[in-house]
Image 1 (tube, rainbow, N blue to C red):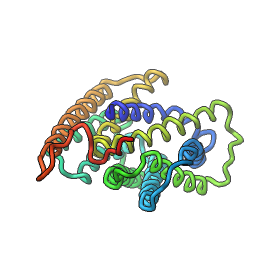
Image 2 (image 1 turned 30 degrees about the vertical axis):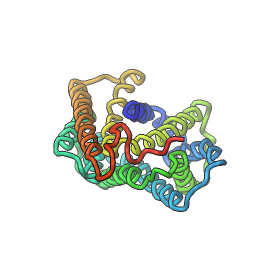
Image 3 (image 1 turned 90 degrees about the vertical axis):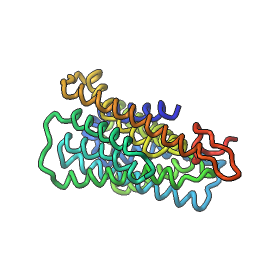
Length: 300
């Protein structure tokens, strides 16, 4: 179930490109990000009425909110300053960086992650790679911070912490940061279609995606989540073909096949490694159910 939900997040993020392009033209990047976070916070905050926030939980939520906002800010600035090819290849390095930060995975997993990364490179290699510039540095930093964000999400989320609470705290941080950066918030150029796009980004790409991402990481691993979320460019291209009238090149088809093959292989390797670790008996304890992570929240 967790893998399917993460793939759903990748599909939603991949489908957001068409909506984001229209919104950025109408209001600018910072305004779109501010509205996306403000609407998300408005949806999540009512869920906090009966929830108590632990002091350390508050600190973790604020930290993850800062890393999450940093990723979006770095990606936004980086994409505007470099080619789509450079940006796609660099951000896909998250697939490789995350397992390095997590540790404990066999070499076969990194081979699978490298295959998926190479597939992304083929997929976005339309105009070709360009000479590195400041935008490329920002995209590389975005990949590093995204990998750190995913890894920290798994390591810092204690069993007693609540996924909704942590997600809400992250969203509020992003709302404050981007609202301050985009102030004053002028939406005079927004019509019904633009507001529908904002709702889609807020409800689908933020509320649903952030909740699922954190929930899944706490039950599987950061490396596995990054691998599955790394299929985002595949869905972006396929949706562009289906809705945007674009055409698939043989190079893009080869890239899609390589990404999916790498992800499938990496999933299998990660599951075997995690199951082997969980089945190692400890003194005075029974083997752990491999279908349940140590980070999983307690059942009611």
